[in-house]
Image (tube, rainbow, N blue to C red; front, side):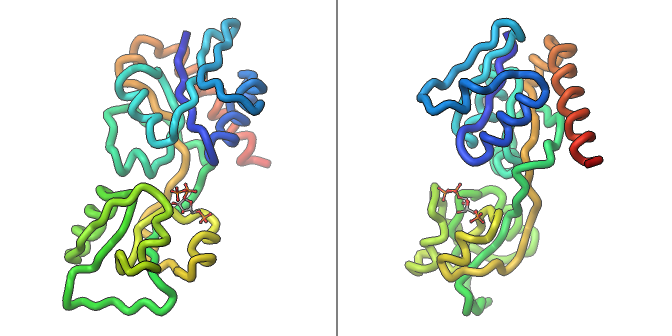
Length: 211
Ligand code: PRP
């Protein structure tokens, strides 16, 4: 059995469609239930549904052989895995955002709220800007409204969350999309099986690009 960690939630549906399109039935995953493990004995694979931010943990530790994860998580957590393929969906950007009337005060450190502590630290270090970083776990957009922070660093997809909270992007600092990753030793041991999946996904992406 090849264990494949897939993200639940927003990215999930696109990922299940991708695996269906290359011949792995995902009907049961898409049906409304609370199961987290789905086996396909004929195809010798097992899907594990996990939190998007945990996919790389399961793959790095070897509980899953391969997985699908957002590049945002890879940049933040820097897991020791192989990144095999850019899947070309789940596209969004890292953005610095602040109130629509934001004026930066360069006489003091910029206060930044974010889920992406490491990404933010690297960025602000690279431009030599002193910051105070505040780590939050979600609903980051509230932080500047309540004056917990001056700005936020977060992912922006449609921009709706920012607009609806009277914030605007001040600067985009990186592109994100879904990536196929593999456990390093599993990639060696299961090379043919994994490369077979990679080839099917590549063919699928190429065909979609040509449409
Ligand atoms: C993410 C992100 C933004 C939102 C951006 O949050 O943190 O809040 O999506 O998407 P948009 O540009 O299309 O509005 P998510 O829904 O993952 O929930 P969270 O706030 O709990 O992180």
